Image (cartoon, rainbow over all chains, first blue to last red; front, side):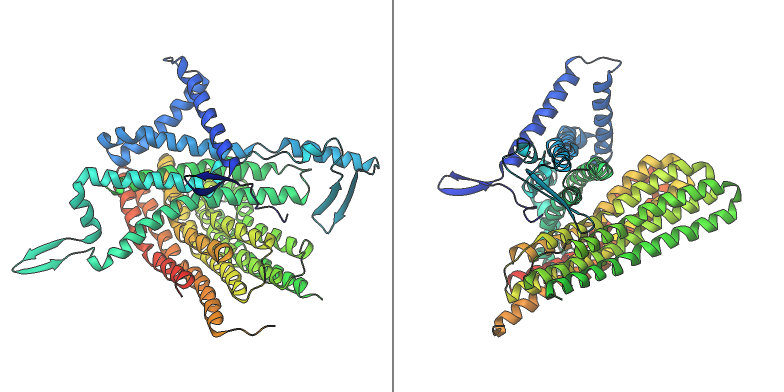
Length: 285
Length: 235
Length: 83
């Protein structure tokens, strides 16, 4: 349990700067992208008027997201943003769901270790410590030791870097939308406030310009809350599932926890992330 | 007894003692509303009882999370350093206070679900689904508190005078920060459930609005999480 | 135990204060935003046709209720990084 939060980092040298990256997140992101592309290609290859199963699922999801986007952003703007919003939704959804697959290798390895210890061999020691803490130590030379070291399928969204990148993308698109839609002057007035001449006096109207720094902090904190909402939920679920599994050394699979945190929280958080993206873009109208 | 063991026991006491307040009140609220609705619709007693128990079981989640941390602290607490003891106390505060809000909050939609069944027992299925979604999203603040508590338990920091207060501050920030958003989430889900009870046809729209409303309500909870993580890791 | 300098004491208590500021500062906005969201759901239940307008109003109302939470965050970050 001591090395729970640790990740493997590799250091890259780019233009004289050293950058630390987490290779697991990279690989998993590419796997997720490959999955989406693959399913998308299969579903889109033979489009029919009466849709098959896969096409039906995609159409259902797409119409759901399209409906919400058009309602919130208006028909003209909405049409422009539907592809982006749908891509965001499906990427976050598949990313959240990929962690549901339990670590089969560790599970099978633990069962073998349990049986191995029960028939009384010296490669493994097995004991209960306390109420919940199951302990076994395995000789690294036994043939199933590689199974116990199988890497997990980790969600890319569990890394805060992915979430921050997605949230920044939405932030930049929302602000560009605001600038192009209303012009730079109107956009700045939202932060700085209007100055209106009235009988020789210049009136400052809300948001008053002393609020400028707080308005900017408010905008930046929206990126923080947007990204950490996804990160906190997915990371929290991972933490709970891993601790519960590691207390019993992966002999039992916490199916209920996987269903709740993986499937349910995954789809709710993907929906919330997309909805907030639509909201942030819509606020700049 | 060693200092670390004393701290772990104190942390376990804080975790389960404070952590059971919210869920107990929430479950009592559901039972109260169930009794009220039985007074109106005695014929639907089977249905009411079944859904009441489902609602109370989900409300219980927060207290179960606190129990898990308390058990880990009692049976699984290791380490010998002074700082390890401080992390156990902070973990107890984080999960203990952090479950008050969503325990109570999860009771509110349960209560309004009972009210809806008392008005019209035919809507029971739609109400149950809506109630469970609302309660599950309400647990978010508890999940954040649990994450911070688990991080604190597995942490093994170096001794420094400043770090003691940073870790305690992180526990307090997450623990108390989760109270308000938990209750707020419950309020959103409560009114959404009442509206579904009046007219189940709007359920899709209401579920959507409820989830957005709850997500925004949790924003301050996320700020608390960020501050707690900064206090634990960066300082 | 070694002696503790005044500067260290100030830094340590500032960190504790940051935790208290954010923790207690998050209670009010959380409940307040809950009221806004709850009433918005009630209104949509009564007038489903006006859902877009109500949702927009809800989001703006919650954003403004959250202001004190952002103040708490700012104060906490100042206490951590500036003091």
